[in-house]
Image (cartoon, rainbow, N blue to C red):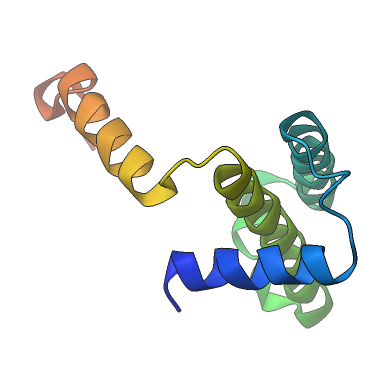
Length: 109
């Protein structure tokens, strides 16, 4: 599903519940941080090896997917409220990263 369609669904969901008055950029960023915290909590005490295998356990996988979806939803809503084309922003940032971190300066794999 295209990003614009997801944003429209989130916008409609918020409007139907009359939440727009609360969904200021500041509040959206704070909610986004909270959801990132909830995602972080799922990995907090795992070893690196356990973290790689987190999706093998269905309960853990469901929790990870749910928290990732919450993070993504708040980020999309923030982009919508601020009128940021998030796809364009990511492409522009990737171009900057290619220049900032050239392959030749990467450690050998």
